[in-house]
Image (cartoon, rainbow, N blue to C red; front, side, top):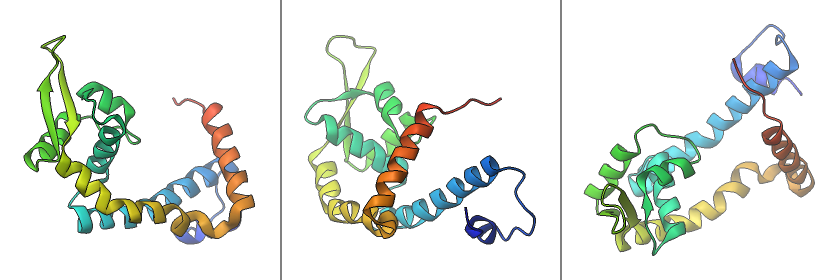
Length: 160
């Protein structure tokens, strides 16, 4: 790894280990990717990344509905309070809640036509995002990176 991570962090000393450097590099890169995405979603959809994620999940099951707990388990970044996220989306008319017909204790959530319309306006930008942010390394290195990420996810360690 070059000194890009150290420069981004304005770090003068060497990293304690290659693993530390890689983890910090992933963190720096994730922030560089997520910051413009967060700003875009706020400006063009008045959404947080988590709210967008909920809408994306529900569109994937449309016209079906999902229990709130299932929505939470499918999120890219886990949010401890899916109920509050859904509350905000319900207030805006982007999703709707109903009680399950088979188990009245279960609340199911589905995307509304208004939510689908909002996602449709964001889709062209969502489609451009990956190439704009990570496409610069070229197809061969992207394939290598995808393989490395796959392997890392498969062999991911635990802490503590």
